[in-house]
Image 1 (cartoon, rainbow, N blue to C red):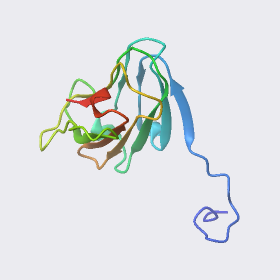
Image 2 (image 1 turned 30 degrees about the vertical axis):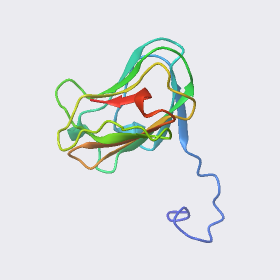
Image 3 (image 1 turned 180 degrees about the vertical axis):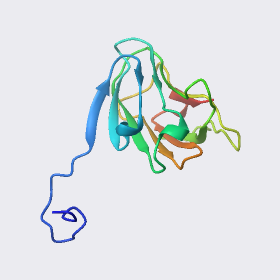
Image 4 (image 1 turned 90 degrees about the horizontal axis):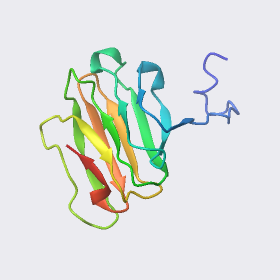
Length: 144
């Protein structure tokens, strides 16, 4: 059993992503790595706080997927002790996205007008949280 998930012929087929809907403020930790979080934008404005980089295992990763549309802003933010988000946004509309260039920033925001399926992928290498955000309209997810 120790390596069944790694064997090509293991017949293990129940490796589903860990999924959880977030509808209120939440602080993430190392144990949240690998999860897909559904974002409920309709329940109100709230913030999801990322763990400190020093408190996560390199390779830590999560996905945020808009699963309930509303007019409220949902913010994904660093712990107040650090600015460690780098990355960019892109959109299906072809508009110019936002980018952090080479400077780490505080937050990513799903704003009013975001649509079902808009998403943010985060990956931590032990120094930064690398963000790739994709939206139907690039203006509906900001990184700053």
